[in-house]
Image (cartoon, rainbow, N blue to C red):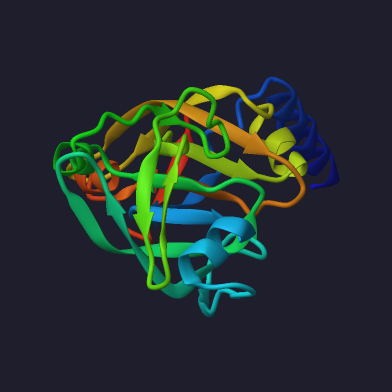
Length: 212
């Protein structure tokens, strides 16, 4: 039996080195609706001097949380009410919306990764104590996978790499252009917005597979 165990171990190691195990591990799914990230300065303009966000619940990513506070997003043609703020405060404000929201607001938002704000359009935010017009920061979130550097090794991918993912089920299929975001401050999770999730019947209990 010992010889067979040793042989199995060698075969498994060869498969790992060849990268064929990347499609054997499934990844949990996180589904995001439209939301807002604020800088501390913009937060105080909208809610008052010295204001601090109120945590409603923790999110799956470490140190991130949904807040009780909401804002109105106003565009040239319309507005979206009660849009949730996520904490903690960031160095720059940004607003992540859905593709359908662009029609209601009357503005075109590019598909970008969070934090990639150069060249994005601005938008008006209205709070209980004031309003502010952001000169940039409106975007539609590009689908992506958060993972640690160790996870990246396991799946045979690197930070910034674009991969394909497989979604099982009646309306399942493959999504391409999924960006890997690998660092040691993240938890393993595939992030997608509600529109794209609904198209393939994804839920918070779903799991996806990298098929790079």
